[in-house]
Length: 234
Image 1 (cartoon, rainbow, N blue to C red):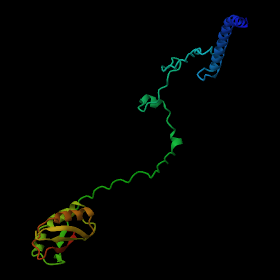
Image 2: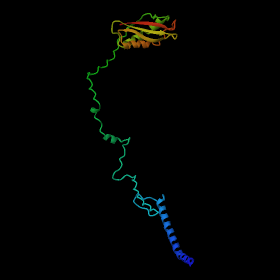
Image 3: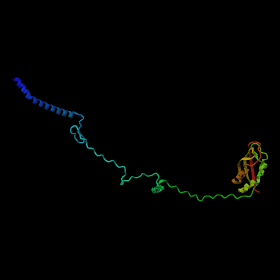
Image 4: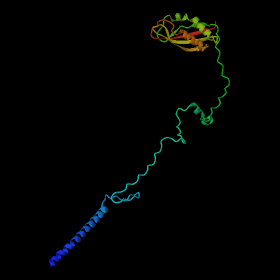
């Protein structure tokens, strides 16, 4: 009797025990899922923008509209001012006021009035041809044979030079010339040693007359010669 009772009680409790176990397993599974969701690092945190996540799937934040880029084209109200050009037109330069001369630099002092400039002296009028005397040539080195005869042929031309350039300024005048004679037999390097009572132009005329003149072959190369000319009125 007792064995049957026990078996009967067990058969009565069998459906209740199965239902209780099933409910317990369901509660344990739900509790495990809840704890897993809490500890899962992949679960997104609260959005700083204020939107909250619902469960494991988070709602993406709404995109913020970007501000429009500034336009590169200049506005009509404020046109760009071009820089000054290096090649400015003369008219634009003329509009620029020039600095005052008195402010930039001191004015030049007025020129001194020295009176009228002296007049250029008039050329000396020609005079009468003088009488020309040639002293014997003096040699510094060597000798030039027949030089006196050759120079004597120039007396008339010497008188013309003196007369055409003012003549004599005194009763007598002298002119001393020095020159060299080389193997060519011509007077070279003619210089005026001294002059008296004749103008500079007259002395230069005689010097030019003697320069390059044939006077004879010298004994030495070169031979220095001194010629003295005496001038007197006719």
